[in-house]
Image 1 (spheres, rainbow, N blue to C red):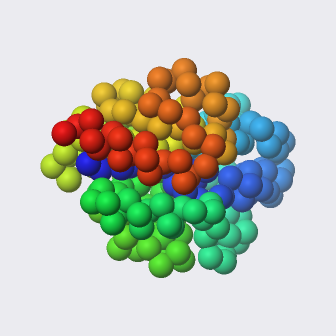
Image 2 (cartoon, rainbow, N blue to C red; image 1 turned 60 degrees about the horizontal axis):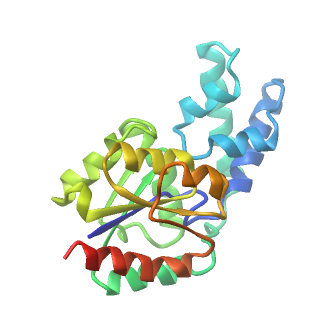
Length: 218
């Protein structure tokens, strides 16, 4: 079985940095900065989709400038080691030891994901990764289909773990089971709309759930 994780807000405690960078990008370009709650709501989407939602009146050139400013601001604000959530690395090591394959499906760009994985010493850790700028943005299931094809797995042999509606809707669109985490960007009530196997409050609760899912697949 393969466990596919979202990155920001699920494994990585990076949402505050995303909010800061997006608001700073708007201020840099003298555009009205979106509220923090609005920025949190789009975490998980690809950057063009996020910019489009946050700045709906902007024209394409302005959206490109905002995206470029956001990227500069985010890199400047997150130059140190990536802040994984407590227990994240231990969970991943335990899953690997239990025989699971591990993957990441993220709204980050390929350049951004490679940078943070390198900073965490995890460049070669995951069996597969997909980013929004090399496939379709969530909740389109394309990145999940691509991961499954690469690893020779079916949707019934995979579980998506994420903190946003976009993650869980993507899994449902792919015909894949999902598990939500409550400590990211969207509330448990919003996550439950997408019928996950469970919504957990801490990463340590995932291992027994995933072992149970593995056992149920035979």
